Every structure is written in C-alpha cells, then in structure tokens.
Length: 191
Image (cartoon, rainbow, N blue to C red; front, side, top):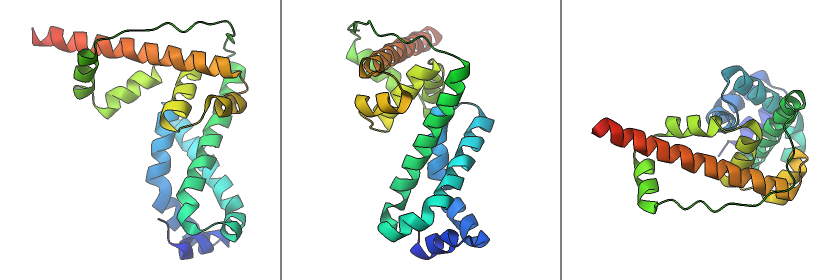
C-alpha cells in the first residue's frame, strides 16, 4: 500500500513526491507492461504515458477514494493505456476481423500439460505469450490475466464479443500447441 502522504505530495505536483510514488509503484506496473509488450521501448513509453495520466488524475482520486485502492486504480489506468497503445498499433497493422467461427475442442493429455508447466519458467512462458499475434495476445492477457469479461474486452478493443471469444480460443490453442512442443523438445533432449 502506498503511503497517503506520498500520494498527497505527488498530487500537489511535488517533484520528490512524484518520484517517490513512481519508485513505489514502478515494479508492479512494469510487470503489467511486460505482459502486453515485448519491446522494451514500448513498455517504457506505455508505462510513462500511464504514469502521467495517473499524476493528472491523482487529485480527483484522493478526493473520492481511500489510498488503499490506489494500486488497483493505477493498474486499471495502465491496462487502459496498454489497450490504447495496442489500438494505435493495430490501426497500422490491420488484423482481419473474424465473425464466423466455431470453437474446436483441443484434447491434450493433462499429464503432458502438467509436465510442460513444471519445466517452464516465467520468461519462457512470456516468450510463448508474446509469440501470439497481437490481437490474440491482447485478448488472452485481458481475459486470463487481468480478469476482463468478453463484453469489456469487446468494448475496449472495438471488436464483437464473439470475436473476443474466438481470439481467446485461438490463443489457448496456440499456447497448448507450443507447450506440447516444449515438452517434446525437452523429452528429445533427455534421450
């Protein structure tokens, strides 16, 4: 929890207070940007843009909220900033919107998935997630990690709920397939 005195100083544009606030919440906020962006520059730019939004809205936050809700509030601002950055990027790289889809059931032996999970570290898992297409990665992060509903994702990314479900399904299938390949590769190395 961030000390309320630091929040008050930062809200009054006190540079030292702003620095202390940035330092106090940097680690947690940076981890969120790592889920959304692989590029270091994009992570830093998004985090800084979000922090500026946080500083601008901080006086209003302090008037209406308790300081124990600050990190939740700051994370929501960061996630929305990540979404905005994604939208800007996706305008340049138009992804085809798919509206007609049918979810395929992928059956994978649970023991194989458990084995993959036990042999996989966080960095490797992040690499797998980052290897998904940008829209699938975005939907997966918002749904599976940040807890957004398909309706919220659809509203945030300007896609349909069905499209959100489709991209989540495809992301899960892709990750399962990649996990199986990791397990197979690990088994081959042991032979």
